[in-house]
Length: 261
View 1 (spheres, helix red, strand yellow):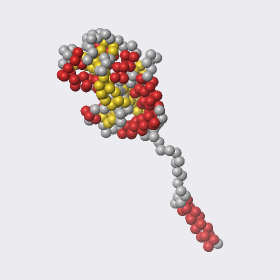
View 2 (spheres, rainbow, N blue to C red):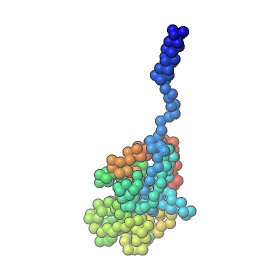
View 3 (cartoon, rainbow, N blue to C red):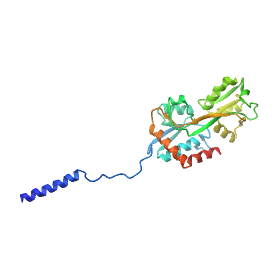
View 4 (cartoon, one colour):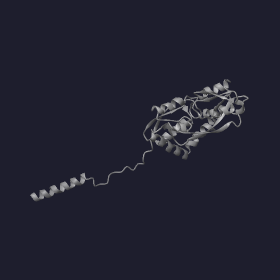
């Protein structure tokens, strides 16, 4: 009987050790890896009125190329966005102060801004153009001599105007938003303004009392999505991956065509 009990105890111990030892293969998750930024919610800062990139439509909806692109990328990559319409300068400050995770606002990629922000690959390339009030006798840069032109602070148009101001003998006055700048030109307080071509062309198309003199478009710059330098690398990676995907599946071109054709 003792021998039988010893053998029985040994068998029980053997089974117990086998169970604790985990000799069976562990279960594996056969699902695909999650997309960059999957399940996260990010605050994205943008401008208030920079059509066709961001603006409020007749129905009161906040829309535009930038808005649609970031929403399409968020859907593609499985994260959520809260878009905050702050104004261009305020949007940049919100990212720098950590109140927003990223910014998309028709923001030109420049070496100076790279000191403060990490940029995505360009998602749009925009030329710069000069526009004047309808019926204006300003037809070229030479006609600006001794006069004042309007620009929007911090934009590619502002940088371009300043770069040629001495050459053509004009002065520059700055505005915080495009609509106010346009009204200043239409009212005759300034004789012209410099703006990215798709923005100006869209406003002229929508009925702004302005026109673009022939030959007054120059090489511009690339727009990029940006995060604070050294932070939110996963958001930047998700934007990059999503941008590639929506370009490949045609969604990107559909968005562009919706606002430019």
